[in-house]
Image (tube, rainbow, N blue to C red; front, side):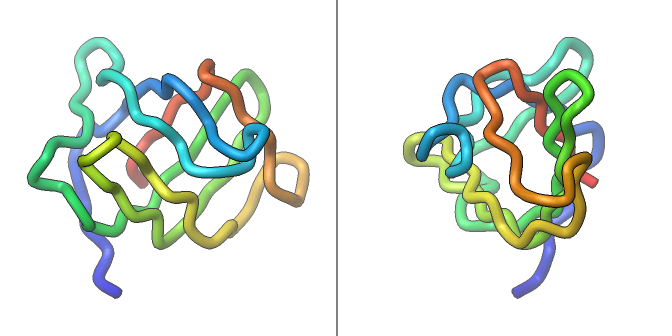
Length: 95
């Protein structure tokens, strides 16, 4: 699996599946940044997910343009040491 990179990707989230522990529904780019696009379909990204002081870093996250979904890949580290139940207030940044 090859990791894709995207400069200045910082995006908001509109929903999180499985009681906050599942795939992220991507919303819009944060002001001044870019978001995922249809051409990113099926590409793999490493990301940081942040909500308030809670954060996770993940590798192998696959974007699906149909439904604008980002599957949460392998947890590398987090502010709690385990997966975090995020809400629609989370922000995703490509790392």
